[in-house]
Image (tube, rainbow, N blue to C red; front, side, top):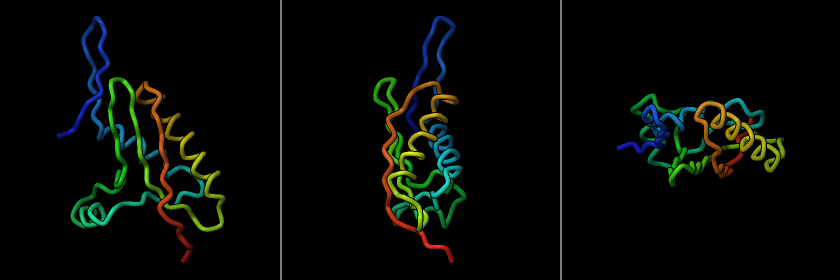
Length: 118
């Protein structure tokens, strides 16, 4: 069951699913130069074979009050500076989540591998 972050005011509430946050993160991360893609676990790789939900594979979203904590496993393209690409990924995800969701997230980028061009 998906969790929701809630924005409450005098007019009512807005509930945003963790799945929505993961889609925003997935879209932002694919735009970063040097990112080859999201890295997943063996379990998520198997799930991907049977579903079309691959733009969010491996992304972990946690809500703690109004704080969004993101863990994003990525693969970096060979030849790019890993620390620089990871920082650009953090910046891109932070900007996208702030713009679309309205909260400033904590973004943890986990570089799980290096991808070589074929």
